[in-house]
Length: 253
Image 1 (tube, one colour):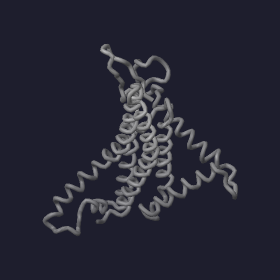
Image 2: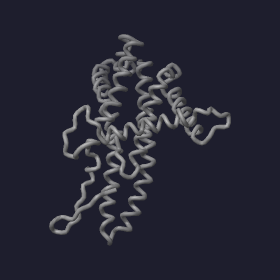
Image 3: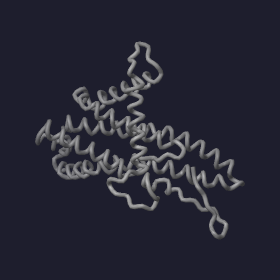
């Protein structure tokens, strides 16, 4: 977990945010990182994709009537996501199920792989979550205008409100709409980063003999909480995507 060092005066020093540093996979740690550089982020995102392929392609290729454990997990995740899309966004949103399923599985696997020792939590980086959120924002906006044309602007016009308040509410709705990708990305990245940082802080305290039992118990409890958070945050990101898609398909207030 944490690597600690003692300062010149003997105090305990540790850096909980060092675990989020992007480093080249090949070469020295201080080397420049370019857009084409293969980094620790690249590695763990690739491992997430490989794990998903292993589950759904190799784990379910038998298509047994009595499914294996691996096939059962794949079927449960498939059914869970399909039901979420259908219930939240509507039956006409099922055509977007492959995209939403891909989002959910990538975030879920990236979150859980980030909990392995010596791993890298890719979803703790806003650069990663912002791309995912921006892709959702652009997809939803394009779908909204393609399907509804100018009627999509009805999303910002609260027709049930008093006429005098409608322009003010329209401005508020417009601002909140463009803030969506920001909140969408920060919610996921911030929760994953915070959990990992707290674990590393308590891991640093484990080096102090007087409080090490408390620190170990705390790490265990926080790790258990992070296992729950990893799944919940993948679910929250996905269900918000479904809500935004529903708004695009049915924009009227």
